[in-house]
Amino acid sequence: MSMHYWKVSLVCQSPVFVGSGEKVQKSQYIYDKKAGEVYFLDESGWIRFLGRHGIMDDFSNALLANPLHLNLFGYLSHQDRLCRKYGSIGNILHAMKKERAVLRTEPYLGNPEKAPNEIAGFVLDAKGNPYIPGSSLKGAFRTAILAHHILQNRGAYKKDWENIRRAAGNKRDMGKAMDNLEREAAIPLDKNGKRDMVKSYFRGLTVSDASLVNGGLCVVPKTDLGLHTFRTHEVSLFRETLKADSTLEFTLGLDDDASAMGHFGIHNFHDLMDVLKEFVNFQYEILKKPFEDYAKEELQDIKNARNADLVLGGGAGYISKTLVYALAPSKEDAVYVVRKLMENMFKRGHHGRDTEISPHALKLAEVDGENYLMGLCYLDGEKPLCSDR
Image (cartoon, rainbow, N blue to C red; front, side, top):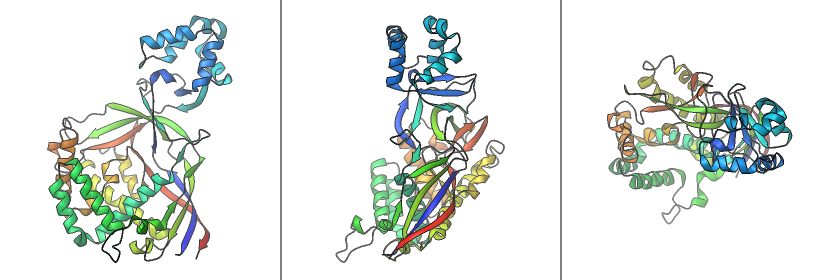
């Protein structure tokens, strides 16, 4: 084994979302339209604040009457007892911060006139700081490395493609076929003709959690841009994301032995960078032709994808998560298989029309009136650390 380590900076070129699984309802935060900010409540601090000001029962009744859509900004603005004491909603919010009823405050970067609804939360550490789990980074690296390997060796995976094509439209069978493909590509056969996960080539890739160095979180609307004539820009979801230009740091370890990352031709940090960039460019070429003329002004940002090293996190699009397009003999074959899967999973999604690309919508984030591709990042400032030999 020959492990080499680097300290690496990750810079967000566009909003990046790594979900915690938490959904924050309107009754759990305050949206201040004038300030353009979202105040996330500290549950225990909020309860203490209500009790301290003698309005717990009043709030409980208001919440029971409208549990999902209670507008806390409106509620506080019309709460006589608080208004008499503090005079304005701004002073009330200031008092809430002082009394630790507010956990954190983040800018809302969508259209101020379109207030957020349910917000999907970003993953936070024990101290409440945003970070990117090493597992999320390694998963993105793994997909890119496998795509590179398959693109270089398509002939060796012809049988896997045939299995996936036969399974098209059946989510369970296609999932099994994809799992088999990944096992075949990532785990060598032992002398008994079996594949032991312990001997996976990816044991030679270690990635720590990425800690925030600069920047922070914001709240942005999700926007779907469809390819067909009925395309919409309807906001269907709001997310906590890392702001563009946020910087994080993590430690990367590579074993360059032929039984590990060396199997994929990756012997150092720059080899990995080349593979990551190749996968981003591969995605860019798939997306460019269907969308470049159709939504030129709105998707100017798509050109920046060529300068990215990584497409990371949730909402970054199906193509960033799949090996189907890398494995398929042609783009048309890939579109057929993905279209059948989408038709099965989303009965009302009109995926039967997909001919140029499937899925037929780009997943974007709206920031200050502009649409951005989600999850574009670049890696920078790698610093070699000690090696294990």
